[in-house]
Image (cartoon, rainbow over all chains, first blue to last red; front, side):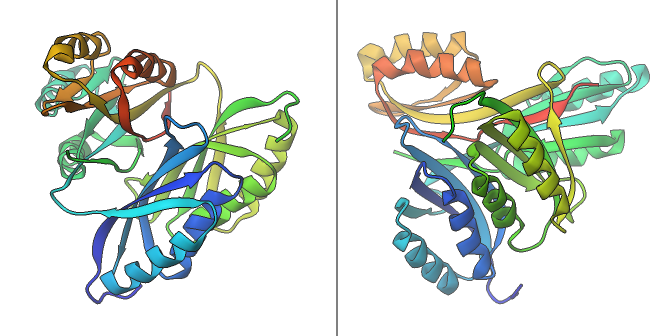
Length: 162
Length: 162
């Protein structure tokens, strides 16, 4: 909860697919007072390994401690931080947005501007969009006046540039 | 690890944004022997709440117990299971794929077939794609012969149909 020098950090954690590894990793991060802004975890091309992308907010010194402790967990194969400018990041969102016939055209224009897809419905549609965080935040800003009744975001996934 | 009647279930869990809630939720699921296939968590339009989409594999009876126990956690506001056919699901993947000049055209054709974007590079590219699980599995199948050197997937995010 400390406000001193908190920044957002993107950590990638390669872990073995064992029961409870997600609970141990997220527990350790929370125990150090880090707020987990988003977390994605999914299998990799190696079926025995999963890749977690974790966005946390906190100061750099504490983050170093957390990384050292995570490295000591038996199921953690590797952990590294992605540095600004050295990776591409994307997330995906699904939103149900109100749009009667009168508003439908306006909504289509907003979707087109952000390269988002919309699926037709009666008085609401599902908007599907991908982009980096700020792009999706911009889209949501423009969708809000229509009325967002449901929202699911994946959180960030990221890959190092060459 | 039991193999009896295991199925994949998609659970949505609406939780308060408190420290440690992710660790408690994932810990409880793992403690019951459920394998978490993917998990995404991100904030909703209500900043005090996060929405988790969890894909687990296990038998239906144990899942009912897990849902009851999760409901008892103070930070869990609501939990429900999405039934096949009643939701749309998407995930996003980023993959670094080998592709020298000779292979580049073939790779572009595969990407186009799946509506995936590719970013140019020297001897490898980043492929960015969204779709449901089987669609992305199909894409990976066709990318594998090129050589996938890195892969990050968000895991499933899902929204109820109207």
